Image (cartoon, rainbow, N blue to C red; front, side, top):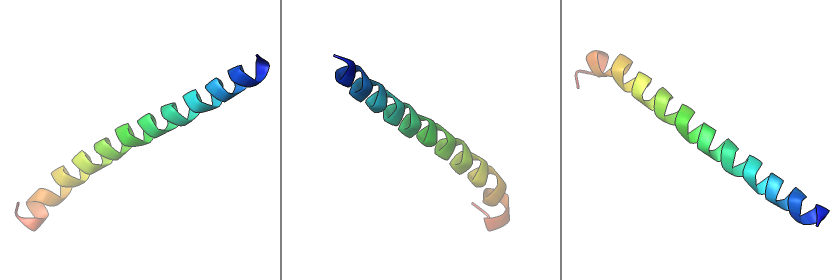
Length: 42
């Protein structure tokens, strides 16, 4: 039972990490668009 909990916990941590990196990536992407759009003339 303990091993199952460890596996579940590990999977949860990985999913959370991927979700967080996706959120941060979106923020960076939006910020870059806002900063670069006037410069590049989009």
